[in-house]
Length: 268
Image (cartoon, rainbow, N blue to C red; front, top):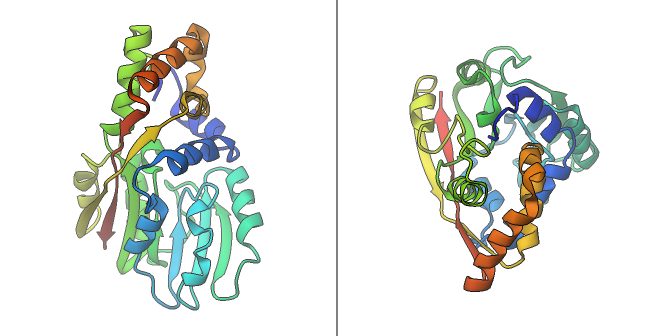
């Protein structure tokens, strides 16, 4: 994360609505070289059965459920939740009347204090959100508590390299300041296995091979500006960063950026 940003305040501002999230999703959708798509890849790894109780934590704008609800087994009960009321309102408007194949519920939930009894859910999902959680140990304990014996916890995340490393290097090259973008996240592909093993009986990691090939520099700047924490860079002049990326694009035809993303599947 960028310096001097309180994590809780960052999350509240960043995800009060889906404008910022949609901007980042758009960049990946437009320029990812793996055309399978991360959402399709995730869906292949989910193992849902009839009458499953499913909880998604940090559902965001619910993009992973779009055009996939009818592939759910009959009788599933899906609870979509987020820390942001704005996101909950968005998914409620999208999915409240989508299908009679499965039942949907919508809740504002903090993963650190999940308001359900022990062993309620057959599957819990938390994609690309655990690195925002202040007390990760407490959060994982809560997930384990509400998961049924034999249930599965699906959580995707990024690695320390890839896009994060690329942006860290670019911002340092432009502004000569290591404090502007530390780019460190607390739950990664590198440390996730160890963290999850403390709460679940079996954990398997799956890597998603992908990269970005960006042909419009402004799209990359728009992606960066979708982050609340870009304010310090704006004060120093965002044009300098644009010119840095544009010089790469002109020299190579595309701005090629590696990505590190993947999924952990944990069993209780």
